[in-house]
Image 1 (cartoon, rainbow, N blue to C red):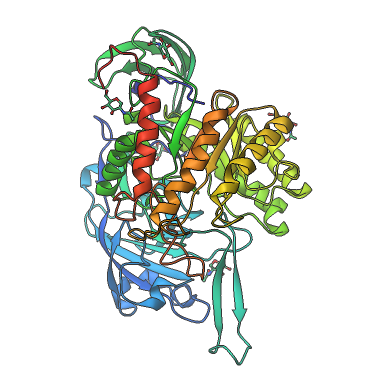
Image 2: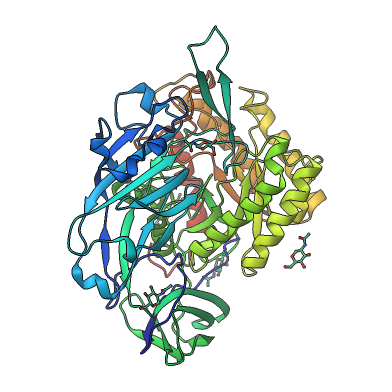
Length: 585
Ligand SMILES: *[C@@H]1O[C@H](CO)[C@@H](O)[C@H](O)[C@H]1NC(C)=O
Ligand SMILES: *[C@@H]1O[C@H](CO)[C@@H](O)[C@H](O)[C@H]1NC(C)=O
Ligand SMILES: *[C@@H]1O[C@H](CO)[C@@H](O)[C@H](O)[C@H]1NC(C)=O
Ligand SMILES: *[C@@H]1O[C@H](CO)[C@@H](O)[C@H](O)[C@H]1NC(C)=O
Ligand SMILES: *[C@@H]1O[C@H](CO)[C@@H](O)[C@H](O)[C@H]1NC(C)=O
């Protein structure tokens, strides 16, 4: 891994003189001379629909009125997950429809412009109403959606936006889940049903990321694609393509490559072509000179939501550790997190929300079609990011089956089709001799828990198991392998000598066993190691989870456990070993 990438800002100026018509895109909203942004973040009114099928709000058309007129509302921050905000257990564990609304004004100047409403992520399915009229719908969390709303707006009086979000997971959602019904079982309360998950993190839901309005001129840039064709030292050739909305015969396009300080490095014109710049800058976070690995860990931060202080803290801890990469397990992270990765030179394996595809029905045709749509949304959102080094189409699916092989052959092939420039992988928890999907990837990620889920407590079995496993995977695949999860649950403050599962001592001993093996393979085909996990995180309630998954090397509050120092020493000695003497650290 460790493909180096140019860091360039791409700014495109557009000249136009006539208007016509077009579509929306997923370019991140950035203010400019021609684009204004209005945030709709803040406290919204909120109400969960606790009716039997959670459909009373739709039947009674709550969107036609201020939500507070339909019944009791509570304040709810946007962005956030609604689950942990109140002290109400029923709301924390709620499955069904929740309603949000708020009022806002727009400037009368905006009547002359395109006005786009963008929701960066709402989990899982959303219907959006502006002034009581349905305007947007989207299925799937973690990815942005947007649409033009000028025709629904009042420019002379107050506006209301209402959003209904359905967090139900079924065999046909990504990630999939099931609803377990006990409706006619006298041993359960009347009408009882419960959401069952097929993955190991809490199904946080709600409007997870920013809600914004932005304007563009009537003729506007709809999409930009930038790929690096070649880099030699500081010389780089970039290929670009610009899509213009409402373009007409009189529309001309001029393109400038600018650096972070706004200095123009190169320019061109036309809607596509190549640009050469002599100021390419290959980055690494730590002046490391090798390009062999992404040595890392996996973030399971609130990548699902958006919390600026936490983003800053997490990147500070990443730098403290000396990490250089993360995987967006197990869903696309907030774009503001990706911005920091771009900015700070941390590389990313960008993973889709396809975690826990375990049942045969999860691999049906309908899901295959939907999965490719999600890959399209993810690739169009993140394709221009220098930090993204690979796409991961799924985590731990049932990859030892022929139906998974058929399914993923298509998803992987499809993803390579829409982005021929980056490798595509998926993360396997199957055995090397049973996996049927790994043959389609460019490099293979595997998750391994020797000494934890198997041979629990026996760190002495780790080295032999892991070596055997790596040797055999490589023998079968003959391509680079990355270990994307290995880890042990650890309750901070628990100690035992000799070590015992769940103690800090055990986590330290466990990780060291893995590292000794990794060191034998990392000069060969092993291209990365990612500890599971960066920080503790919340899961569903179960007898194997004590207030969440405790495999973090940091606590949920982002403070180090003993194992964090082991990783810090390891990562920094690798950085030091590859740092030219003349570079200051
Ligand atoms: C194209 O321009 C017209 C006229 O300005 C505008 O109303 C419309 O929103 C634009 N269409 C699209 C799809 O951008
Ligand atoms: C919520 O989503 C689930 C799964 O797609 C669906 O079965 C259910 O009908 C939806 N609820 C409402 C009230 O639309
Ligand atoms: C893979 O995609 C290519 C086009 O990009 C197509 O020709 C080929 O048939 C696809 N193969 C499969 C198995 O989908
Ligand atoms: C890495 O180098 C820095 C600067 O020379 C030094 O302070 C640090 O102790 C080294 N760390 C390791 C683990 O070698
Ligand atoms: C990069 O690191 C290697 C050691 O891993 C060293 O031999 C080489 O000289 C370094 N290259 C540069 C340009 O400093």
